[in-house]
Length: 288
Image (cartoon, rainbow, N blue to C red; front, side, top):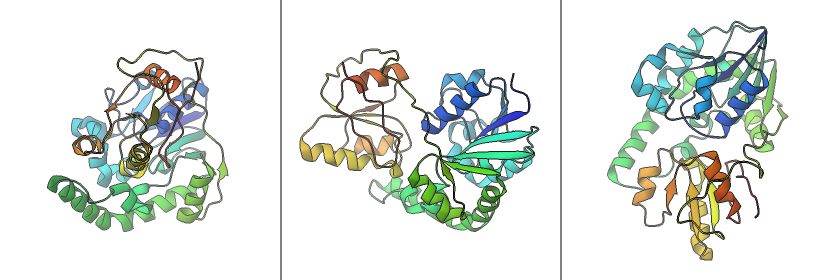
């Protein structure tokens, strides 16, 4: 049991690098409660079920647990209503967790400032796609335009309240400086998978391919990886899931995509030559 320390994470609803960091924080501070807005057990890593999660009132709404982006207009008030009871709060944040208040001191580990506020066009992606995709994108752009002024004020105030602000990379450090005027210290995240980890064979995948591991979101630039692989004539395997999955499947350029466990990903990395989208963390590369 870790006395006096609490943790925070935006939402435990998906599988990604930020969620892995949140779980590593839970390992580093065993027994520490983790404040978060939403928890979708089927959508995120199963290890979150063993953490003392303190969820917001929004977690009572199944739709929001399954689709956390729908909750964007009400996430800031939800965070404001939760109060942290701890000497030190360590927040794993991509836009919301740094807003938790109540601890005597707050340390923020920032994966990226809120992309929906500071990189809106990259966050929403292009208008390419069918009529339904274009309509959803336009509706989201209108909603973000209306919400952004108030959210920017809330977000900036939350960032400046922190006692220590850390960035996961030099790219994120520059983004933090541009968004908040904070000169954050860079602390790279620990590796998520190791060469000595568990492996499980993936049927139908032979060694020698290029591998991309990323959530299927516009700002992850997976489409750039697909184009590069096609230009070189290399076989590409994309491991991931996300809102762009349906649109990508309908694209004639799209390779096969899937979700898998860490063991499966390690196995795929073992048979690949390795590649990644520009804005996502590099996958594990192993040989053998």
